[in-house]
Image 1 (tube, helix red, strand yellow):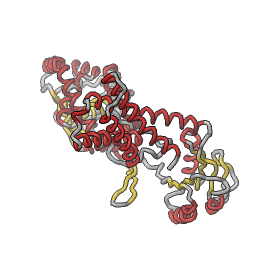
Image 2: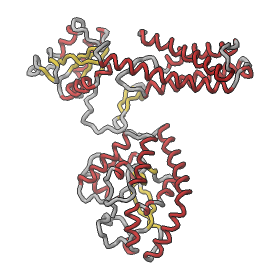
Image 3: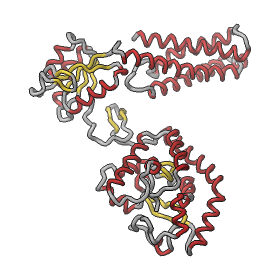
Image 4: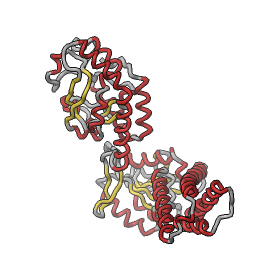
Length: 459
């Protein structure tokens, strides 16, 4: 067990003690805790040491970010507080405690635990950034992947890993300097250099076809008690929400999977339904006025129902206020996209398109479950088929429900896509949104959409 892990165990127990004492003072204006309160705090501190260890919170990962550790802290904190409540119930002492004290204590403990981790991580990264307590890394493979590893490690000194040498079987590379690091010899030499060079880690960066070489290398260096990391040569693949998991005991890399599954999917669903109801409650007078304007501007129905590609490219029917003359709405399987000064668009329809008011009925699509408020814009089915062979990543945008607005739209990639490069830019922005989704990102896009309703690219 590292000294830092021991320190964290002591600090975590102290956090529960100090926040319990502070909460009692805030509630009763007194620091003389009764025996029952002392016992509850003692139990929480003891549980913290055990529960946080079970959630792997004490393994220091400065290069992996804080997300996993924060999730472990939150899960452990919840388990600890539930454990305290169950103990109170089992001992029939619940009536002896102030509910206000317990609630404040719980919240203060969580905030303090998170604050301690952020401070500790900041201090540790500052120390690593000055070259102190860094871990020396040897890279097996000086090819494209190995060079990428060296570059990334050199650009992030705060994670505490310093690449110091390459090893490669290519004779033309041996003795050369690659990415500022010497190539000290072939792969067989690593075993002999681990101790004299004080390597803490060996990163294997060999191509997937070198399976036998990787196996031999592992057999040679694994017994030497050095940390070995294998970096799969998958940088050439288009990754979307990639992750590592285990299935029936087999290690599996999820190169591409749904980015809004589990808790994220539930959060997105709640966001869509809540905001759609609130927005419809606010804009219904505007929708009534627009409907009257559509009816008065030209003969035909008020609502235009378009067949579009939705989640997993399944067909959905998207609602819009009609903006074109009646004869253009009989079948939209291969209708061309609207262009500037398109004769099919009515005068009132042009106004609706410029202001995006024609999209308002799509909040009903959100309530129906076919669309989200924020997401890639739904395209006609024929347009999807047209671009799927031209843009290899095109259908990745259908991993999530289409949206009324999106990151591509507020960044200016709205309107016609007569040229392939325009659609490529739209797809790139859609995939960026999918890979970086968060509630705050959605709210930012919605806010920016309000300020960018008028668009010269909307015909």
